[in-house]
Length: 232
Image (cartoon, rainbow, N blue to C red):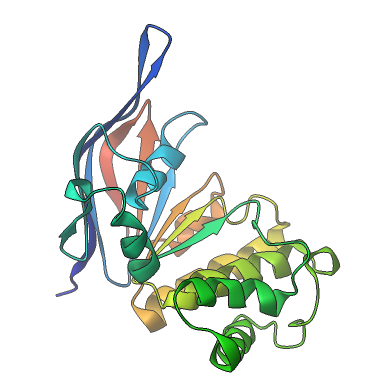
């Protein structure tokens, strides 16, 4: 039986705008098993990115629990959360968030440096990660010289720097054409199978449904009709 890498229990997030309370996430509960790919879908403003940010220990919940690898992160102080992110979580963003003045290799190296891997070892590991995402021939290219799909592959290589148990992706195909987006989805699916990583993808891309084990539909911060289970 696969273990749960993430457990979300009765999660709520309330924002205060002037004198108005906005319920961004409202009583959401689910878990994500090792090796599972989950797509989180819903209209803009439904709370998808807020939910992902709470799961990634970037935002604090107003109430509820987020348990990562058995650790109750909602009970931890702010200074302890970066360690959880560095140890267990890899992030992939729609905007790539690469350093424009650094090569593909150097962008991945920076992530390794933050995890305590430096010098020649960092350079070798960064090269291996880029080869893993089929960019072995682009290691010395700057982001401006890479296509959108190649930039996203660099960001995936960077996310894999800590060999994460959990990969959180926010619209990873949003800036990509259909063919390139499909290859990125296949790469994430492959990582879940080979590395047993849990992959949670916030998306509007309906193609991801076919590559996912389950789809969560959010509307007004709540799960709509529970969790839609599906088989591979």
